[in-house]
Length: 157
Image (cartoon, rainbow, N blue to C red):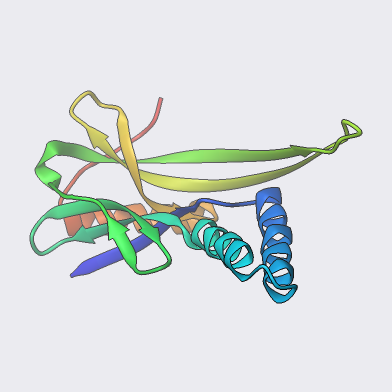
């Protein structure tokens, strides 16, 4: 069984608003006559807006692939053997995105989530394999991954 989880988008929070403004500007430039310049802006913005990172877990072959996806279909990354990891852990995360205006007024967004990490041989979280919105969902997911991957669950200290 192959499990595919999206982890992070390249543009989040206030940055997506700026990307939408650039996208609309590129479309307007394209329709006003400068097709090459406008289309270049539109393609670049679509590239940034569609980019995300993710993880594929192959429970049958006992391997994992951390990848980056561009335009939703081009995925880069290499498969690794899960035997290089000793377990799983659950880490609460807090992401703060701040944007400042020219008048030095700031606007911040705070997002909290729980991430399931593979633990390397140095007993450190290596990389996330799933992102969950609440602790109960994360606890259920880490139990499922522990059974599927036959790895113990470590608590963070």
